[in-house]
Length: 141
Image (tube, rainbow, N blue to C red; front, side):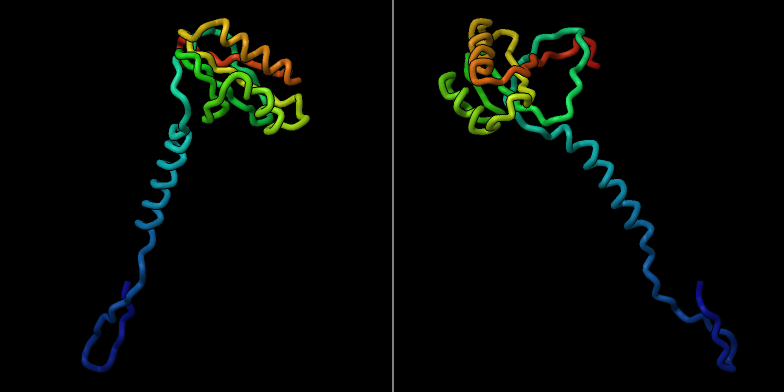
């Protein structure tokens, strides 16, 4: 909308130089939604083929540690590879005396069951009792 000026020679419309920010806001909102949807999908980790189960998810309030055993028997604390004998000292160093911290064990479905049990035993011997196994839901939910 322009402002009408009457300077005696008829009416002229003055040019208004307002910035229309509506398209910019629309683009920013679309980008925000895209980043909110894709950010959880961008988590990186060790790729394992988890076994499937129909058990319900475990509710937890604290941020758990994840220990992964690959098909080849490699052990990872979060994304850091380590040996079985290094696991207990590393857990104590990371968690200190917080023995109630939840620790998730992710074992590849083709991993050696004995190796997974050795990892769980090592975690328990280090004084951590809240150990849970991660699986995939076969129905995708």
